Length: 329
Image (cartoon, rainbow, N blue to C red):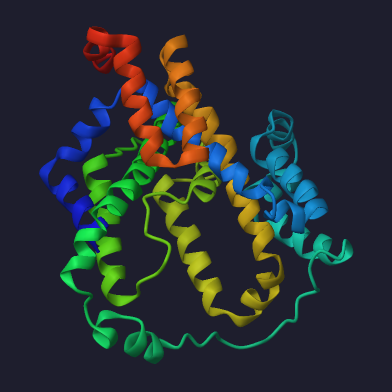
């Protein structure tokens, strides 16, 4: 709730756009790179998903990277409709492949297909999970949550930068549609989502501005031209309608349930790849890149708050009075 109110305040006051502009490029690069490296480390750390699904993740993620990012496959798409069809399906072929590979390598059971419609228990959620059933916490909890809100916003801020950079990259390729990404508007949207969810359906995971892997899949297809995706808004909208519909269909849910860990690993690795690439592009000089590397490393080990503080200190130590000039660049 507090994160939502904070984001709405920044968006409504216009401060969000100014904050994005005032942050030095070295810190922007470091936060984005750090988010990518953190996503990768979650998959490969001790006890991570790679240790549970080593063969399936290796094969499925390798093919996913080939289909999404390979220049060779991009050329094949131009020559035959079958390659275009596979490419247009996004990560769906990879999910189907994982459903088959995981049981073959004894890393997950075969899916137990069930039929019907899923039945979310809204009554229990309303009476035992929301503020309408359990009430509001004491004011002291809101006060003690302030440091957590600020730490969460630093991570969220990295997603804002990444989303903005990816869309600007797509905007350069597709001159037929103007993509107007406004950080103030974005803050209002995900601020309202967090505030609404805190009342109607609180969840451990907060509502950020970006689902990085799916955002990349949509944008990569969008960059292939109007014949592949007419509009970025239609692409994102159809994806969300498709996934939300799938959540209501019990055959779809039961089919993918055994390989959810693999699907999440795929999401994290795509996010890591794109975040590191975008983060490096944010750097404007060698010094920026060095500072960004330190920030990224600290973010993975110590968290976003320490990383941001270290970035500010390094910028002042290295650039000194020239920091204002670096911000204006």
